Image 1 (cartoon, rainbow, N blue to C red):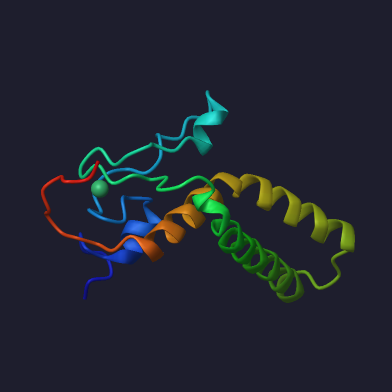
Image 2: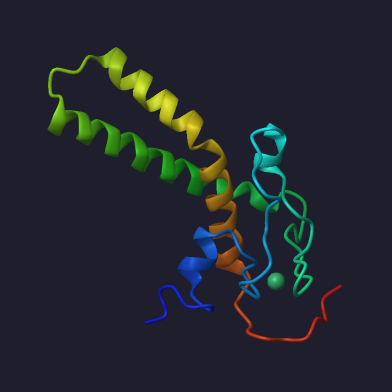
Length: 132
Ligand SMILES: [Zn+2]
């Protein structure tokens, strides 16, 4: 099983590691004292020097992944309310969706970018740095 091993794609994407070496962090550490840090991305991998923005507008497609994640969240909240509190109002549904979407925004931002770059950059274990 390579689900959670060093070369696992799932682990690399979920922890926002570099898609090439699965070791370097793609993002700055999250800090609530500095809200902009939630969306700050490193330019290159500090382990293998892989560029995290290979071209301008590279993460346009990640928007569609984020859209999919948010849709899944909305459906999960709606199904959860149907199952456990079937007399919910539309207002409650919208408030719950809004609050959870705002709270999960940094997470979805990071996961969608991590997944997007992992689609195009293949994993290469223990390769010496030769990127510019
Ligand atoms: Zn790397």
